[in-house]
Image (tube, rainbow, N blue to C red):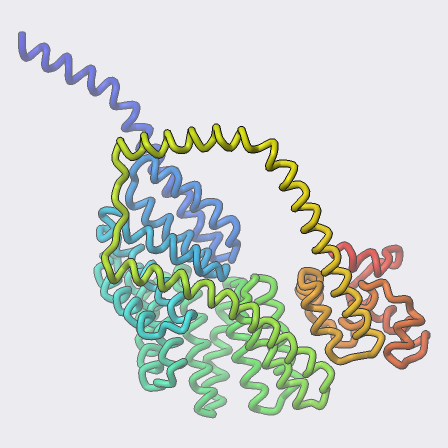
Length: 480
């Protein structure tokens, strides 16, 4: 009798829990499917889609308490945010993965988390901390059981270490890790998995031989990298193109150097890789200086300064976040769980706050509206002052006109430059003056040319940007 009762209880428990277990298995399968798709979206540098998919996977993993999915989701989100130059949020997500209870069970993802953290610390000029993270990543990667995955991750880590040691001018160490990286990739039979790393390592070796003035070997490695880029239609080629530009610059072939630098900048702009902008603008400035086109050289020099300042602001903000994370890591601080009594107290406090807020809202609503109107008026006044300043620089044909224009209208200028990277400094200046709605006669007067010359330049500009004859140039520029 007792046996029958036990069996009945077991059957009832199984009846109630089986659907939940099945549902949980379905969630895990869905999470894995979403994260597998991010492998392809990252390859195509579709960061927005990557973050969308991995965020869904993270929410589902958290609800199902699926630890592997949580760790992997944190890694994918952190990696995507890092490539999008959002270092604060990237560090935050990567650090959360380390707080998942059994994270050490997943060396495949933890090794990559340590690697990306190392890349961020290197960017923030924390070289020693960066090297510690890369060494941590290497030790963790050795625990990955599957050979091709272990070799793939180690090659990525070695590629990052090449960058660090090249930066601190330890050429011997840099070359050692280049060789280690290539050796790892040569072991792998899965080129479909490893080709992005192979492209970067071949480009790094090409750059190494270029610095040794061994142009023949540099050319061989860079050509091999380009063959892989073409074979797999790999979207990112800015680094390889930049090194090719350096090669032709050293050989005094300025035409080819200019071609590769422009293609590299167009690629970086297309993918939103702002960290590459300063060096590419500097390289373009150097080429134009070498061929005597000082106007264009000045333009790209100004672009270099502008983009460096933008990145510096991001770097300062991210460094502050990194220091806080490091302090937490060193002191071993962890957040304590909030107990039931505290939750009730917090809830009560919030409820009282809502009541007070609802009482005060009507009074504050009127005050806030007045403040918003005042701020709006002030912003309009500031914009008018900036517009007057830009117009004054244009009237005086001042060389600072384009620099100030970029500062006042950054969204327009960056959109224009990304859509039409081949525009010359003269073209861009004409676009700026047209955007400000300066009449043709005044443009001619300010730039000391004839009206007919301005009209000719405008006609050439329309052809260069493929603008249909029935579309007004001013209207097109305003739509950007």
